[in-house]
Image 1 (cartoon, rainbow, N blue to C red):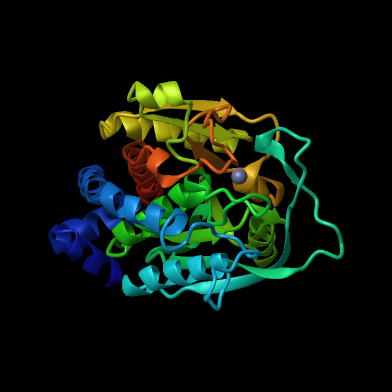
Image 2: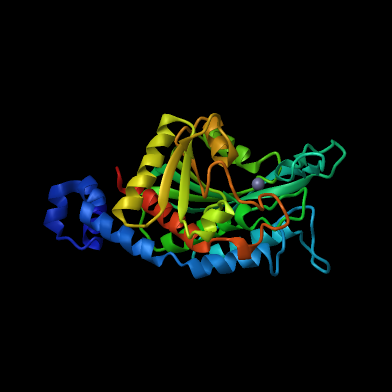
Length: 340
Ligand SMILES: [Zn+2]
């Protein structure tokens, strides 16, 4: 009965669907293709731009636990959490918060600008940072989980707005959640906003708890600094995405990014690289035992001249590039969702 209804929703006749069975319906190439094209075309770079300016300029210049704006009750990272939660709830999601104890990094000005974060001292204050989760339950394979994540905090040791790092990935995952709100997924799609500019990284808790629960995570896409690249490449109008993987299972996801970029004429210069060791928030999942984890990023090695500096502002972001990366990631996720 469930499968017959699924067939009717997809617009084919009842007897035809009963003949083909559920897997053929879920994976029907033409309907999958059509739904992916529809979803891609719904990605709105204007909306992403509004999120980035809201989260990295006005009203929130930063997103950190150790900075509360004058006259405000909550710190700027908690205000970020409220903003994301409000958007997600307006699209029908229930948002779950997972608290993790963290500290701000100290700053070591003897190091180069990009690497001035340094370990906190034990007496430095502790804060509760939250992982935010929103989820779409899969209707035929709810136990099969695809994770798409972004760290939402800005550098805790310096006053950098972190527009590329990582208001833009935060906005990208938010836009994916909006576009997928009405999509009927077969697998479960889990959206996660974590924190990587305070210590320890809260993606470690997210990944370790998933493993302890026995979650069957088949893919992890980390969106961090999407579209961020050297100034001359931005000036030349280049639209680039690099998918970096650690394990063979991640390489398969990188190949899929390349396939969908071509199949749906997204127009990215799409590259893949192998990381020498697990890193960033995708690395937290690799280390917890989920090898199918990758990062999508605008350059490798990362080439934004304002990386971890005060000049990482929304006006410097190539939002069109970032939106194309969101389109490709969305296409990869839906392809995986239907690949049963
Ligand atoms: Zn960073």
